[in-house]
Image (cartoon, rainbow, N blue to C red):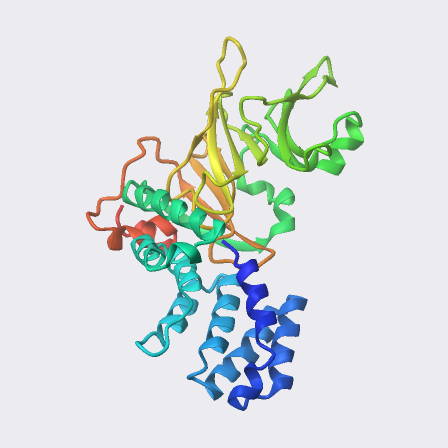
Length: 358
């Protein structure tokens, strides 16, 4: 979950920040400029130096912590905020709640939000409260999933995943631009999932009259693509994207961005009635598939017995983690009693922790 609103307030509220504590105004402005340009590593280096020079500056620490959250360094952000938490100087409750939430500390998130006065609660913080309540229940019922590999890649490279990831029976991902060159009447965006025999395709595109993204399917009849079919039972005024059909021909998994999830894009599952072809009302997947960040797609290769989850959890902007896991059809729950024990495996951080309870 990103902290853009809070970041903007921190950036513009601090004209006197440097002069008040004797910092180099040039260095602070440099850090902010680097951040605006997306040079996260350089900005982090400058902020770190400034905080070391002025360890008691609460406003500076909060600005640095918001950057750390933005680049996926959630644990470091929380440690920084807690390092100046005392009776005389406490971090912003809203930023602290976001840091707790990003670290899967949902009880602490709710406790921190509970200390806010009703007048201080914004719609964003009210949404965070609801997400934390949902996420706490998900954490308690998290599935056991054995991750066998993990890699980080550019987000825009998802449409060109290496072919060795999947069997030919799974199907394939295709760039929408390549797909349109063959079927110009379809307006797919991003990428298209095509079933193994190439008889059915699934994709998403933005609707001009609403501004959100919906998912569609299209059949190939006698070698030609038929008219596209919007998946009405799935599409809402929110963004839906990344539709992937499982090899059973029934189970469709896609991502949706809405206030009913636990943050960013969340993964949903819907099943198709084999007689009518209609999809059922989607259900929100639990942990570890969903997280406080963006969870984009979930692929099952039943022939190989492995799956791939794409998620931006603990990633800097523009990056995505790909987790390869062994398919667990029994949906066994984590064998732990406390939320503290469940947290590493449910968050997939570090991903090797998921193999310790097998």
